[in-house]
Amino acid sequence: MPIDGLKIIQAVMESSRIRESKGIIPIFGVYVSLFFVQYYNRLSFQYEKLLEKTGGDQAATYLIEAAQECGYATFHGIRNSWEWQEIVQPMIEKPEDQIFGFTAMAEAFGWGALQVQKIIPEKELRIKVQDSYEATGYRQVYGRSASGKCYMLRGVTGAFMDLLYGEAYPDGCFTFKAEEIRCRAMGDSYCEFWAKKNDSGRP
Ligand SMILES: [Zn+2]
Image 1 (cartoon, protein in one colour):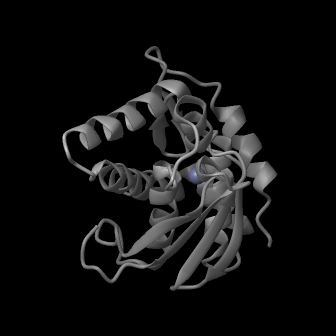
Image 2: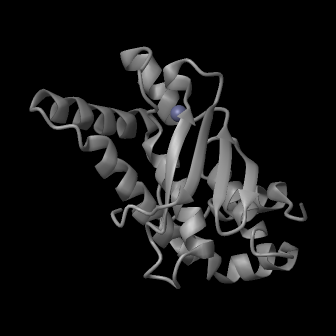
């Protein structure tokens, strides 16, 4: 694996010191901001609980879709930035190497320690995450869950495959779909995401 993840993480850390007056961080061709993890978790999970109270069970689907669309646009921007061209592109030998670039970026963003377990080009991607903040947040407030709770990382895993093997941007989103097959919120020792081709015809 020729991608030096540490080099990417250091580059993100270095450039994230630049903040606009409103706290926006222009980095790798996109705009990001610092956000309180507990606040984000609270919004997601309270939204889910609220929908459940009114008989709806679509919250997880909506949150995963939102994450996949966001990941698709964000990592498209990152991949087309001058920083990517300068720092990451020279390390890329084959298309799948981009995934290691994406996971290093995600790690630098504070989403957890992402480890690529398996890539079958054009077919499958498995990513293991040791410290997903969504799982931690869920357990702290609600205890053990019966299903995976890491909606953001689940959507983003699908988006990584969409960017590599879907139609050219912006037509490739939801070509893949990820499941969370292990989650710390369910009592597993880590979370694991498995993206495969989405044949459902729906997001
Ligand atoms: Zn999880």
